Length: 308
Image: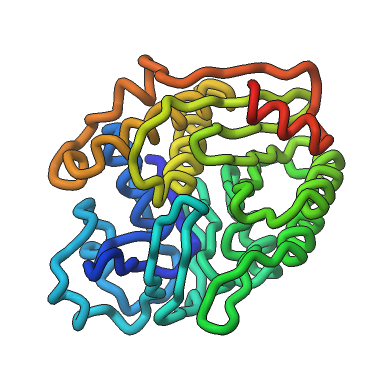
């Protein structure tokens, strides 16, 4: 059984006045449900007051009158999707309680610093498979808004050493504010040995750096709100590696499945179990471009993500 421990506070989003389930644990559950992963489940490995069964149901947005019933231990965002990117405004913040790391794999993906760097690095030692998403370590909350802050990301990556297990560090270009920060992240990654780096860029795909090679995954473009895409991608990469698919096939299937999920989100959320199984397992509506060696320069990253 693939048991995914998700280290992120239970997250709810208010979108256009409606309360919607969100955050890494919800999207991990949705992704595994969408690909028909009967041998997988999602766990919240920490003390929480939320009704976990309710939180991990696949239905997405609820009715407006449910806003009064928001659990006290949830992190809540007012979320707006704009052409220039996503705007987050925190309405309530919640720290993760006492951790209980017991699963097969881990998605360590705080949404807003509810897990500190020391704990994140310590938790990695408990798992043979893990993705460490820097999103919640790269954000700084001030003046009622969420802004990008790069130094925490760099400090975190610097702490992750070479390990026998599979660790991937995921960073979205949305969470990397400038070329200087990206250059420093790439320089750190050059010394990480068998730790993978996944740099995602929304519809342009993802650049994967691992060992002595690198490649770009280019997903099928879909005109849908991309909220949750990164967490679903990380979850399915871990699930694929656990099933023995290898990193290239796992990322290819994950990218294809995420496009399918975004496109058919409502069908999946209301009982569409396994609707994206084919996308994940065999009909890869995504492309892979292998690069000659590693990709450690900004020019290489830009060229790879723009042109393949």
